[in-house]
Image 1 (cartoon, rainbow, N blue to C red):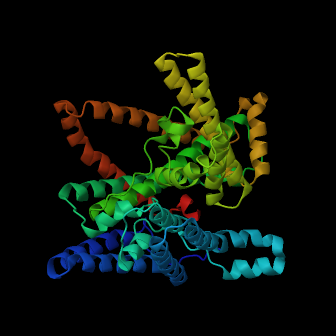
Image 2: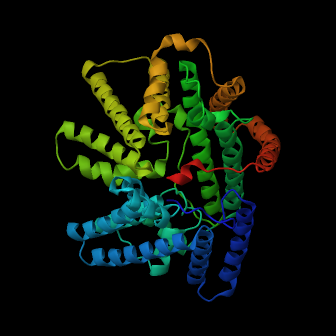
Image 3: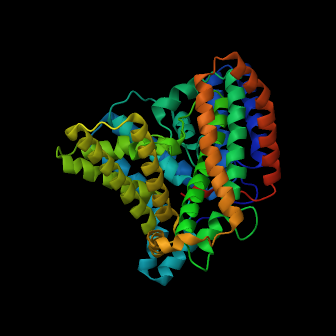
Length: 485
């Protein structure tokens, strides 16, 4: 179903991409200084760079993206002339049809017979990033319907859809945020320095931490082995370790990628939405979804949940809308039942949290702050870990077997997983919380001369170690887990 990219694909984790960034940056400075209309020339340069970047994955992918961009731009003009619900639904229908054909039809085709299924698998491609840039097109149409003052040119709209740092896997952008920056980016020396730091941090998170959690330090270890190849079954301890390992693998994988993307854009004076902000420090499910995949979760909130929740005034409907929105969130990841059940679980967690908040208000329950914070964190962290088991499981049967191991306490006596992987997972998880705590402490004391001197002395050492680790791990083929969505 997914057409594999050629060897020339400009992967954000490749050396060619690290050469691509300064080349486009130099050309940008050049067109800014020598052309009579620098804004238009810069936008055309960035659009050409974006199309070149995407075409290295597949010319077929690029054709689908260009067609989607042209049709959605025309739909925006059509909707702006008369912003009615009927015209909006035409745009929604086109974009949902795009997703259905390229992302879901090959999966569902197994119900049409083997002949149709084989033909679709061989002939229907899944363009990389289609879920992300389709949602960007939808948000543009929604904003036009809400009569936002948006007037992008065709070049600006195509650049919005294809902007090379975000086209593969977000963050999900919105036109009101990017349009002014496309017209007048203001890169400073601090932007460039911060962008480079974010790129290095992202590469370390993605190519080092996520990679060793996924594949392990040695063959036959790691999260992928635990979920895909363990023949002896799981103990309760194994399931907890796999849940922790996969949660942090996903975090380092996607948060690392987001750092690379945000850092790249920052080098060019473009500020993108943050996508992650210490999600495992959350003290409630609602807070978690303001810290994890923030660009997509806020998109679901603004364009799915809020319209649904305001459709009817009853409280039960608001709760149902929350579950429906999160199930759609899960369905966005793929047509497998594991994703849909995961979304339903997330919705139920959010509803349960709201119910508990109402109970606190009605009963005037006042827990000590330390108890409320630690208890909320522990419950949220464990609930999210268990939900990731469903998300990662190969099917619902496997998820059921793993939960069966969790509730049989006699299985907690030993590990089946390799000891090296267990120790590595625990060390990485504990280090995450220690570093997060130290970073918060440093932020509270950032004006202290001692802290400034320590930070100034340690930064070169830390970044040197990170670069060395990136180089060492680059001999292994890094797999971007979230790219499949």
